[in-house]
Each structure stands twice: as structure tokens, then as C-alpha cells.
Length: 275
Image 1: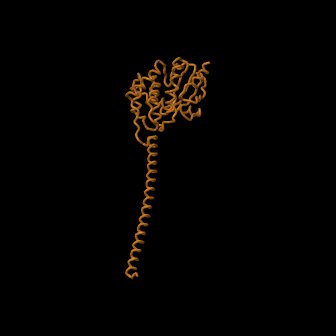
Image 2: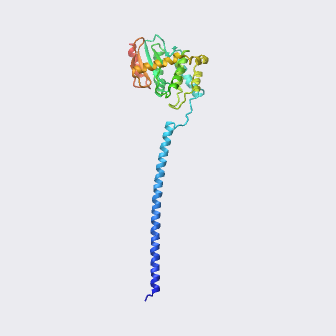
Image 3: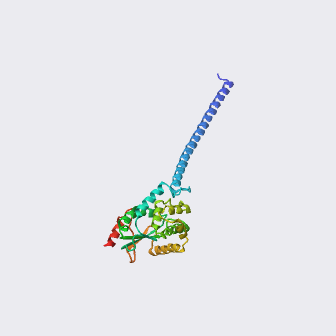
């Protein structure tokens, strides 16, 4: 027969079991909540890592404000560019902004921006075969004209174009612009500095630097750039490179080749005019 003391002991044990059960329940709930938090933190960490990686890729692709190493005016790459340009233009007459014989039956006007990467593609891919087949043989004359597109700052654009035109005072403009395109830096990286322009002048075979420097102050060169801009605007040009093509001495017509890396469309149009 149970006593009051035994009942109290049973009640105490029951209370202890209930308390222990409640504590286990609370502990389990706490651990579950912590597990959820850990999972969420892990997921958040993964998301953050992905976002950081994406941002890093974007920064790398766009330059991310980091300084881009400008083209070096001297060294192996520069020497290679000089050799290629010298070989391409050797023996071809130049006069100011024009390349080729003045009495060539066909004229191509090439509107470009020296910092334009598409112009670079044209000058390195489609242009050399045209120079070799038509300019060198006296059938084609090419004039280079300035049109601002890729260069962000008008002052920089004018400075670099005047530098090229100043080389034209010594009939070396085409050497200068081709050396520029061969060593063109990353667009928007502010690589066109006075040191860069001086370096190109030093690379240009036979260019007298003192005369080139003096010619850069000739106001007529700035006027030529303004005139080119007016012509481009009148033609409705919106990008570079843009072209006018026709028989020499006649009104040239807008020419849209459809490609800047292959010479076939240019060749076909020139052959048609030569017939």
C-alpha cells in the first residue's frame, strides 16, 4: 500500500521526466532552428560568392577602372609593326592624306577614327590586299579622312588626327596611321598620350621629328578635320570606317562593303569601275 511519501516521490519523478522531455523538446527545436539558419547562411554565402564572381568577370571584361598598360612605342611588338607597315607601303607614293598615284583611275575615300577597333580590323585585314593589287599598280588612290566615333574626347581626337596629318606634311601620313592601327590600345583606356604619339613618330621611317612637331601647330590641319566632319555629316555617315568610292575626278558615291575583314566586296566594286 503506497504512502504519501511514495506518491510525492512518484510525482517528483514524473515532473522530472516532464521537465526533461520539455528540455529535450526545446533543445531539438533550438537545434532545428540553428540548422535552418546555417542552411540559409550557406545559401546566402553561395549567392554572394556567385555575385562576387560575376562582378569580377564584368570588371575584367570592361577594365573595371583598372589601368590598362598602354602600347609601348619601342620593343618587339613595335619593331614587328614597323616591319609590316614598311613592307606594305614601300615604294608607293604618298601626298598628304592620299596613298597612291594622283592619276589613278579610281579613288576610295576612307573615313576613320584612329581609336576605332573596326577601322583597325579593316586596315589589318581588308586593306593590305587592296594596296597590293590596286594601289601599288596605280589603279587605286586612297584618301584618309577623319571622323570621330570611338575616341571619347574631342580634344584627344583632334590631337591624334593632327599628329597623323602632320606626318603627311612629309608624305608619311599613311605610315603613321598604319602604325597607329597596328599598335592600337584598348578602347576607352586613355592610352593615347603625348608619349604614345611621339613614339609613333619615332617609329615612322624617315620622319624628321622637328619638322613634324612644328607642323602640328599648323591651323590648316585642324581645318581639314573640320572639313572631314562636315563631309561625313553631309553623307549621313554614322560609324567608322565609312567609304566613298568612284572614278577619280567624278562625284564619289557612298560605298557599303558589308564586311571589314575581307577584301572581296571592295575588289568587286573597284573592278566594276575599272571596266
